[in-house]
Length: 122
Image (cartoon, rainbow, N blue to C red; front, side, top):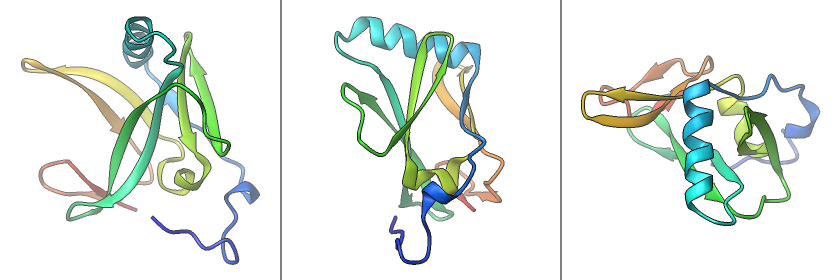
């Protein structure tokens, strides 16, 4: 993902933010409790897949200088400012599908998703 600062400055926009469901917040708290020094998780995007972008979740031990921090029920969700044009307004959930448990992203900016659900387009 490449943003050109001469044409777009993420700091110039009022962001809606990111939200966590109670299930997602509980899972992030659980992960943080199991990993000493973990502050929360970072949600970012990368160019991938047939639809354009994919979500990336990483553990955070130290925030990056351009991270925005969203907190719910004691769980912290970090997001790089440069990712906000693609994920602003996203609700992060943690669900069980069959035998699997996974994070799900409800992104109002996603105009389409690939068939396998691994990537989205804005």
